[in-house]
Amino acid sequence: MTTTTQIIREQFLEFFQSRDHMIIPGASLVPSNDPTLLLINSGMAPIKPYFTAEAVPISPRLCNVQKCIRTNDIEDVGDRSHLTFFEMLGSWSIGDYFKDVAVELAGDLLMGKLNIPQSKLYATVYKGNDTIGLAYDEESHRAWERLGFKSNQIVPLGDEDNLWGPAGDTGPCGPCTEVFIDLGDKTGIGSYEETGIFNTRRYIEIWNAGVFMQLNKNADGSYAPLPFTSVDTGAGLERLTMAINGNENVYQEEPYTLLLTQMPSVFSQHECRVVADHVRAASHLISDGVSPGRNGREYITRRLIRRMETIAACHRTKIPYPELLNVVQAKDGRNHEEFKKSDALIREVVAAEVAVFSRTLSSGLKAFDKVTRKLNGSAELPSQHAFNIVTAHGFPLEALEQIATTRGLRIDRPGVELLMDRHKALSRGAPKPK
Image (cartoon, rainbow, N blue to C red; front, top):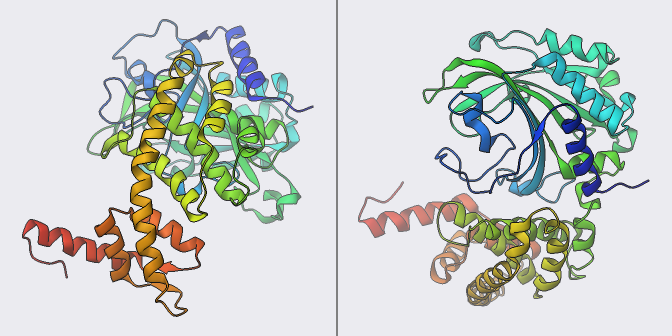
C-alpha cells in the first residue's frame, strides 16, 4: 500500500511524542541571529544555541519538521534523491540520552512504527580519527548489533561521510551513525557483502539516526569538547517516504507526481524534475521573505527562477506557473500556515521576475542564434562569442551553457571566465590577468 509524506510526517511526530519528546514548530528558512548561515540547511540549525548551553530548551527532548534549503548540490537536482528544498524530520536529546538510546529509537521507528524490514537496512558508524581524538564508534556498533544487525550490515566510514557539521563555519558537531536502505539488484550494482564496496547508488541514506554532538568546531578549525553531549537526528521526509514506498526516486512522491503532470510535453524527464523542485523551493523562499535579488540569499531565489525560465527558453515554450503553484499550495499550505497566507505574494513575485528575465532571454537568444548560424557545423561556441553574449546582454553564463547543451554545443567555460576576469580588471583599471 502506497503511503504519503503527510502520513509519514504524522507518524514521525506521534512516535517521538510518545517517547517524551516535545513537538516544537519549524523555523523560517531565514536564519535568526546566525551570521554563519545564508539559509536554514538542517533541522538543528535553528536550535544550535541549545547544544552549546547558550540557551536552555523548554524540554531536553524535542522533535519537529523543519523546512530546509541546500543548493550546494544543485547540479544533481533531478536525479533520484537530490532536492534544493526539502523537509527534515528531526529529533533531539539535549544533555539527556546519548548513543544507545538514539540507536534504539531509530530501530523502533524504522522497523517498528514504519515497518521497514531489517534485512533491507544498513547502518554506518564512524571509524575514528586520531587527529581530533575520536576513536572507532564501538558504542553505536554494539547498539546496532543488539537490534539484530549482522556485522556485514554495519559499515565503518570516515570523516567525509560520518563526521557531521557544523551547520555553518563553526559550532556543535560530532560523529554520526546513519541508516541506509538497499535498493537491491535492480540497481545493477553488486551488494556490499559481495564487493566490499558500499556503493551509494545501491544504498541510499534515509535516516541520520544520530549526530552525536560532543565537539565544537572553532573559527581556526580546531575542535573542543562541548559542555555536555547531545543527539541530533534527521531524515529527509521526501526521501524516507520514497524508501517506504519502494520507489527509486523522490519524484515518485507527492507533490512532485502532481507537478510533473503539469509540465510542457517538450521537457525531458530531467528538466521536468528540476522545474518541479525549483518552483517549490522558490515559493517557500518568497513566502519567508526572500525575494529575487542580486546578492546573498536573494540571489538563490533569482537563480532558481531563472534556471526554470532558461529550461523553457531552450524549448521556446512557457512554464505554467499558476497550475504549478496551485499544486504546491494544496500540498504545503496544509502544514505551513504562513505559506498559505503568502499565496498572492508568491505568484506576484514569480511573475515579476519572469517578466524581467524574459527580456534578457529574448535579446540573448537572438544573439546566440545569430552566432550559431555562422559556426558551420562546429560543436563549440567560441569563447569570445560566448563572452560577448554574456556581457552585452546580461545573459548568465550558466543559462548560456544550458541552452548550448540543448543545441549540442560546448562552451569553453574556463576561456569565457578568463575573458570576464580581464574585462573586470580593465573596468577597475587593474593589470590584465595573464
